[in-house]
Image 1 (cartoon, rainbow, N blue to C red):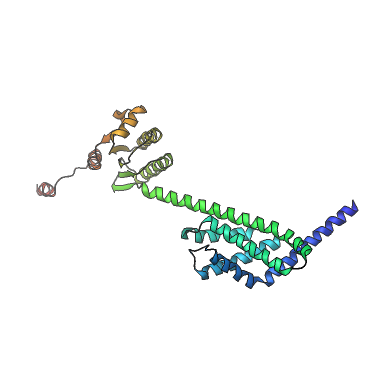
Image 2 (cartoon, one colour):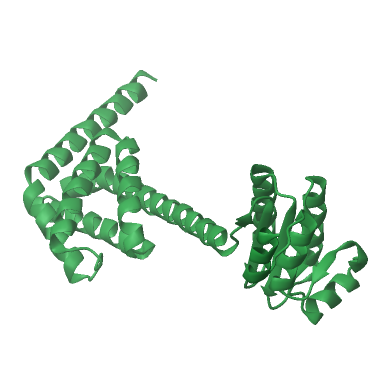
Length: 297
């Protein structure tokens, strides 16, 4: 038992010594290895959205974080930097395979430098690689996965922003809102539409909403049912919804799912919908000349 413990301690000590030797080599040759890595990134036509100066600056920062991760075994600092890097380069069109590619290139550059350091001592080279490769693989995996997650997060944010822009709730006048709907309405966008509309009704204390669906080419049963629920939810908040631009196909879908169109206020077009909304609110639009005559009286 004592012999096994001594052997384990000796193995641990050997690994620590090899790690220190590895880190010292990478730190001592930092400038040359970093330049070699940046050169190979350019040759491989990776990060083409960035200038050579930007590539070199990022390579410097990544190299230092990479070295720290190898030395300490902690990847927290590298993860933080990778997230920051992702936020800067993803909007410029950098793809996940490019990030993975540059990390693998760095792994290759550093490994080649170890082969050059121990050209005759194959045993020592093998021992150093046994220390280096697990750390390098873990770092590569962490950076690639982190970048992919950050890219997915940014894409979700962009999609959310696009959906919000594609379903604006417009204030026409006091207590009157217009919701123009354009394009394909999927279940997720339908839910977002409902949330936006109900929030706008509450904030603006709206009494009438004109929902124009002229620009919606088709609507399946799930979305049509959601539309009806939106109308009902708006009614519970005290707002009447006037649906305009109802196509024959969408009307047929509503009938097929059992909606009583008699309970839904519909008008042919947007102009007619606004006129009906103003009537419900007690407004009356008259020609300027007629208004002037009324003021004289």
